[in-house]
Image (cartoon, rainbow, N blue to C red):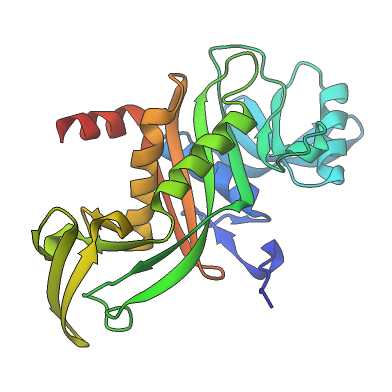
Length: 278
């Protein structure tokens, strides 16, 4: 049976010591930190004869992360009571529209094409199987494999109130994951030689000497060790050239098993520049 990890089982804490209630809140905080924006969390807001809290405050602007019907109702109540308040909602699509294909967070109430937003795409079908070896890590210095699920965040300028169409984004991500599915990953620094069809890899690790002949069509050589962090970066490199011009940054979460993984963020222009230099 698969284990299911719920938000209540995991603690999400930022560098300021804020303890977030959900992964959506934590992810949004990471986007703000990545963009270099200072924020306050769980801010008190006067609302007619009572007070309430808003998740994030950035200067004179507010953001409510909508994880439930109660959050959505609170958001609409604030909008109604304080119509001039600069506030937007960020949350799951099922609380704002009927989106049958995906259940992914997105922005509410953005009308200006000069504003930035983000979408998150997380779906059980966004997964890949792979094998790897980490010669520098005792436990992982033998050939072994994983099934990893992936979540992608796409950050960019809003065009017609959206960053990227969910269906288009999901198609791009699936095509990218298909290209690395059922591959063997290893750092190219262990490559000794190659011919037309094979790589010849060897290294001495904690578990002995390995000398492998690997078919090229099932092997993926990486610039660094085949860690989940490197795989996240590699997926960003593969996704970046396929993104529309309004996309400014990408984030990739890879889960290696239950409740562990890596999250990498990168600016699109920096990734494309790096790829051109190669």
